[in-house]
Image (cartoon, rainbow, N blue to C red; front, side):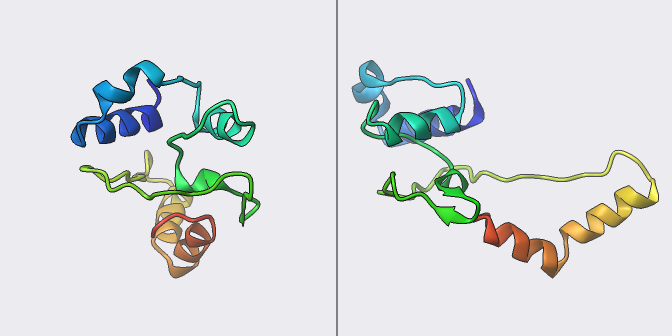
Length: 111
């Protein structure tokens, strides 16, 4: 029911894999729990965001990235100001800056 699970389900359905793997699926409350299951050996594989493979900008060595899947609809994060206040405008301007893009890339986001 969480976004990552919906992306994983859509990927599996798009590739006609969902019905085959459905009996073996283990659901988790969020991607951190999925990552924990895989790290501890309680699950063989898991769908997580690439950004969750990193902690303090360092990639975990407990989990191997086996494939970066191509989704039919890419994951995007959108921003918008809900006020006309000066600080909101400054924040939106900052998010478009090279500095913000550099920070996002350091945390494995595409920007």
